Length: 441
Image (cartoon, helix red, strand yellow):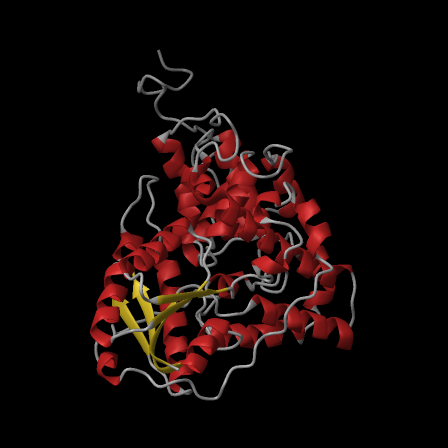
């Protein structure tokens, strides 16, 4: 029995089906359950955006508040501290004689740098990284990571018949906390907006899981999934999955139950299909490492693009010559959410119509999206830009065609005030001279 363990929460903010928390509680006499708020999340990066915007932060705080309540019901306490994770955890290890550090395995480059830094600083300590964010563990896959299929279709063919582990059962009580540390935890202050459709936390996630599969929505998912808005048109699980409020295995268990007790059709299969897309991007990100963030991705040459600050700002604020793009971006900025179809449209616009570096779009999504997941976000942007794993090249969505198909009566554009105030994309030319109207002399 190890004396003191530290559980470093990250994208696993839940109690149900949490093998990290289970492992730690079974093998430790006392636990420090820690979440670090890294100041670096709120500082602008070289891509003109902050890693975490206001909507994401509010959803995170809601998730932390709910996790704190769930842990308290099982005899534990969540400690929330601000600071660089390496410094914070190093201090706790030294002060409380920590024997072992646990975390949910993360595929993010920066998250893994922190983890490796700690391992190098404390070579005598035990570090345990447990899979909890993916459907499969690495040993489940029927191929080595270096042999990851280059397309999703190939990946799906190889994995969709694999057995999926059932969610692990959690104890009614966890190992007790370190009492003297509880008073140092940051107060999590939440200001909920009236426009919030999503509320962070395991409680809200499980309520939505039950509500969705108690409705007829799963039976019609494939027909409605491309709608630009509407609560029941898509599953809406992504924010809770991204933050770990909901276990992906719990979701798939509930899907199988629905197929057995209600019906199984092409739409219910398509929910699994989309979960496997998410899964594919997890393994792509793990394989690519830092190449996930390179302009050229897996390509030998960089995409032919420039950075036009004015175009970028117009795209961010929904002030482009394209009403549908404007409406979608205003929806994102207000709610922190956008449909998958909408994301493809605005990403294609940034890459193809505006001819901007795709990474600026990916970074802005990282700042704004409630359901930001490093693998899904950056993998999908690489996919649109044509620099990712898919050998077929990029994707170019015809905005006029998309508008006619998904907003034929203009309701969505009007709802989000996407109307164009000016059809002019640039107010300066390449030499920074003002562009004059056609009738000017």
